[in-house]
Image 1 (cartoon, rainbow, N blue to C red):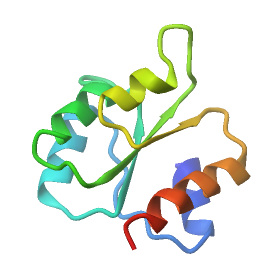
Image 2 (cartoon, rainbow, N blue to C red):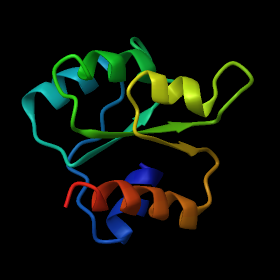
Image 3 (cartoon, rainbow, N blue to C red):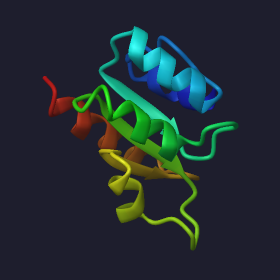
Image 4 (spheres, one colour):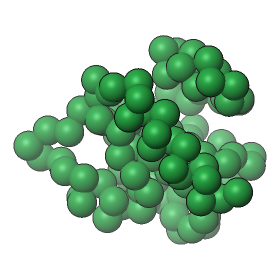
Amino acid sequence: MITKRMVENKGMICTDVIDNGEDAIEAVKNNHYDLVLMDVHLPGINGTIATQTIRTFDKKIKIIALTAISLNENREMLLSYGMNDVITKPFDPNDFYRIIANNLSEIV
């Protein structure tokens, strides 16, 4: 919900907040999104597997990982699942907005 408020504070529209990987996959199948902010550590199917599954039917949608990168996961590994970029938590608001803007500018 904090992330949603941050996005909306910059005038962007956040249409859905999904709390698990299975529903994230279905939402992307059934809706049009310009960008997905994908938490890596979701209940059920995690964000990496959800992204990998989404890439089987949508190769173009921008997906940005939200994660506290640990020793077991790194940027290159996350990108290998089909994510376009990574925002690490806790994130600096300026970095958060810059990464989103960079990815959105690629689809305009």
